Image (cartoon, rainbow, N blue to C red; front, side):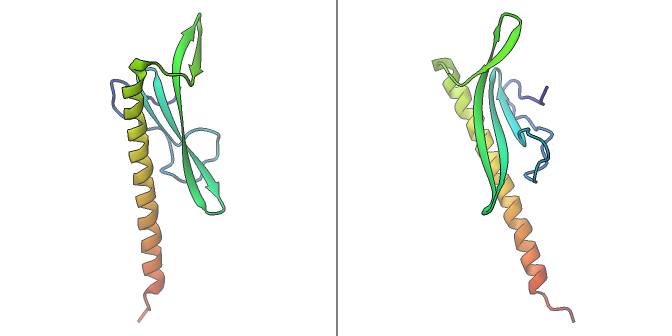
Length: 112
């Protein structure tokens, strides 16, 4: 089971901080009860792109299933999960920009 979020606190998955992933797993997940926002990393020709999928888990007999349908009571927690996912993606983008910026400065420096 993925690391999850309970009681409204963001989950920190075993993700790799936005680096290329070797498996087909989200790089980060946020849970609010049965609601989950999963952040996926896709490396493209224009650079890394994050996408988010949202699901609601429910039990059908003894089997857990996921749905993309949300009721009235799901909307606010879903919005909070999406907000947390957005914040996490923004942090990853800032780290990437800082990382690229520090490499650019290293290249600009002339050894004496």
